[in-house]
Image (cartoon, rainbow, N blue to C red):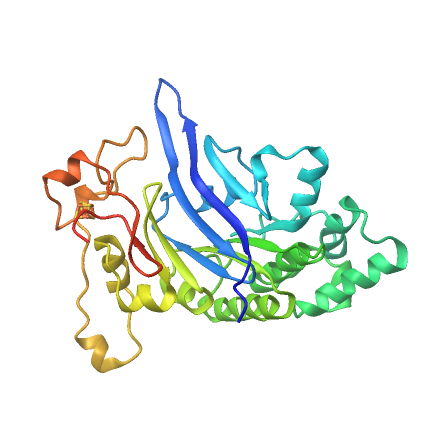
Length: 319
Ligand code: SF4
């Protein structure tokens, strides 16, 4: 089988925020990864770990402080105006809170049609047909086009958000915690819809979440972030079977197991200590304050993110 083409390469990406009085919040600090066409990379970690900032910096909602994002051969942070417009068509985002991300004064038809208008894709009857078509693809129908967002449930609103992204036929979608605000019963429906759309349209996803079980279901590979750094990355299967970083091990130990016998013997690794502040972080491994294996070197040197087995990357001095 032919090797899939790399669609996105993230190289030494940094996003710092100046929070006043000389303090720098290092939200994303020197991370590297690539995503192939048609692949889903899951990105997990506790809130504040930098996963959403990573997604936003990749699609240039934030300017990078350093490093490069190469999309389809072009550096996203060095595009000219025409290239930037094309990039916004190719790279879309689905947001965590579907209600806050939809303009309450616009009809669903106009929300879904907004991108079509910006990129002058269709007008008149063709525009209307395209809106109906996309609503149908995401499991809504054309009668919904004249209604307003408040008339829909959370799951339906997320479908509207997906339709809005899909309407302009993007290649890549950053799914920024798209299921976190939804009822558990609805989460699987939205994830299954995203999987179906990926199969049908060859979409590439960066799927950001803190729910590790759902991430496993949708992702080909998973990256684990901690305090602005990537600490582990592997295929979903490998990561869940053989987590190597102490932080990943702790996160996975918190997931309930469906088999009651296995669940009875599940040992939860409780993380001790607080999440340190990403403002002016101290040298060394950022996880050291909560790590039960920490040694002297962990306070002195930042562990390198390196390949310890084929396609399994870890940043830890003891692995
Ligand atoms: Fe723990 Fe040290 Fe590994 Fe960091 S580098 S995860 S502190 S053992």
